[in-house]
Image (cartoon, rainbow, N blue to C red; front, side, top):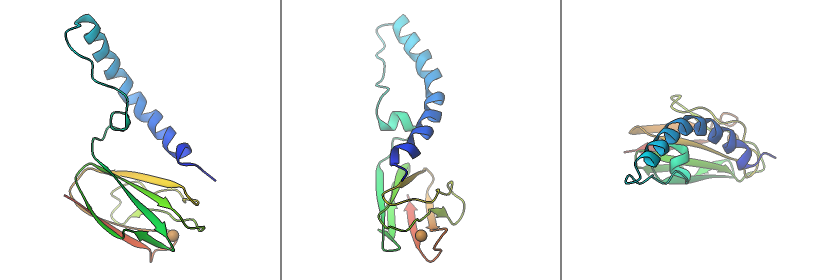
Length: 135
Ligand SMILES: [Cu+2]
């Protein structure tokens, strides 16, 4: 069974590569001029590049819970499969990358950084649908 970490770490590692160079330059500038305080560079929002909140959607008995959700711009949505059956998360409009098949207790996340309505479904069981409104 894949864990949440095996999914998240490679993504973090890629993001880390994006962040390291500018952070290193900024740190060098701060060392050269000690009156400028260095920002904290640890923590989830710094590492992921999104400062928004996190909302969780669970999959129970072939249904997303909550099925509909309204969230602020920049929210990270984390879906977790609590069924014994695999499920996937697919954006109806291709607004985010489809998930792999989630095993039991496996999670998938996407950051929704544009306002609008995001309809999604399970690619294995297309009758499983959900909707997120971002504003
Ligand atoms: Cu499914």
